[in-house]
Image (cartoon, rainbow, N blue to C red):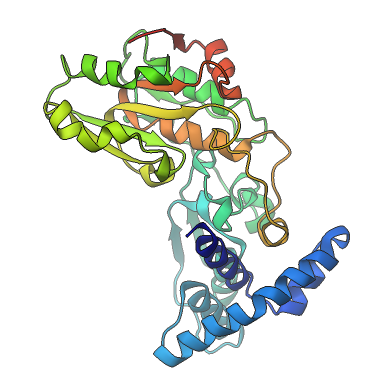
Length: 335
């Protein structure tokens, strides 16, 4: 199953690139070009089969739609009438999609581009998103004005102080002040031993209201604890949901529990190395340790309105644990 997912991802990256195999190979760094060429040749039959399946069904995949739209614009077969273009979630934009914006703007010199995004929540590099299109917006898209939305209604001030301090340890993230309208509890962010999950849920069962939502998050879906399969009978008063951190983006809950704060295999931050295909076809990684994993944890922290608990492996804690402690996160042996 994991191999199938990887193959699907590599085909997707090749489609997202939009160029020929020769162009992909030419774009590869010289030191890994030979190895990359061998991998691309291995993938070529799969990519060919994918294109043939699309043709047979009369279908087009999403990268194909983008590429066709760029070609239509470049050939002058469509002249854009739009003076205003609004792009939401701009931090997730890929180079291919940026090319579509450039093609639209070339068609109409009076076009204004309005981008809404948050570089602190850029967590999709694995699918081709390039953060510098947001953090270096002016260099890519020309002179621009920047306006900050500096008040959040999502989480409280105490949680924000820790989450904001944590994300801004990376100097490449845009600096901004973020205020909240609510104070929040003193221990808005608490670190607990991972074996205390059931104890925590027992305690929450005593005071959390039925309409309040508890979101339990993990780095990977297969890390869902077995005890949650019986949550409805063990804790019938609690409204509990489990999902991955990536899938939680855009969601909100009253309370959040983050699992897997450990180092090593299945750890957080993840230590899985990139394949040579990913090294070439993905945007260049940032010159800061665990930059995207840090943003991923920031997203997890800021899903909560009131309180967050992070479950750590006491024997081999994540490197993030010590950083959060220094920022003021509480550490407890039990809930």
